[in-house]
Image 1 (cartoon, rainbow, N blue to C red):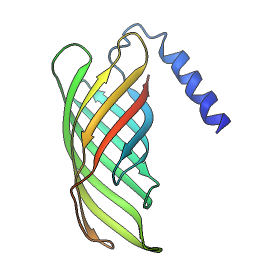
Image 2 (cartoon, rainbow, N blue to C red):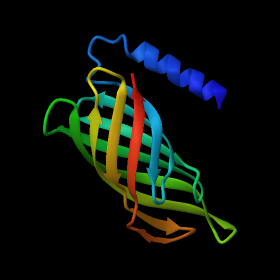
Image 3 (cartoon, one colour):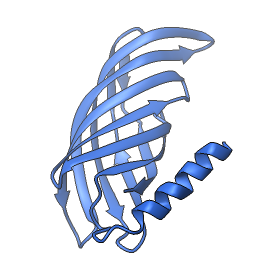
Length: 149
């Protein structure tokens, strides 16, 4: 945990010296949601396209890979995003872990604070698992905070 906190503070310090802090290439943080809670890493290819990886530790270990399309809204720093992707992992239910694979959608709103390297998000990420623990999981709303650099 100490190494994580030191790394987080170093990333904040390095990213705060960037001249154009409003935009970012990489962001690392956490997402708290109903079915996907864990670590988040996001890479922006350009202002309109990004990919995000989530590693969920709540109901087993699941990895999500999502393509997201970003649209500026409201005012500087706000982006509406939408997209989709896949998930793989082990879903644990009642002490039984099953391999799981599925497809996901995502829609959300992110705000990157211009003066500091933090981005906050709120999203909705439904999931349709077609292998292992199958079914449609519609109730995944999440909140996120990321260090952007």
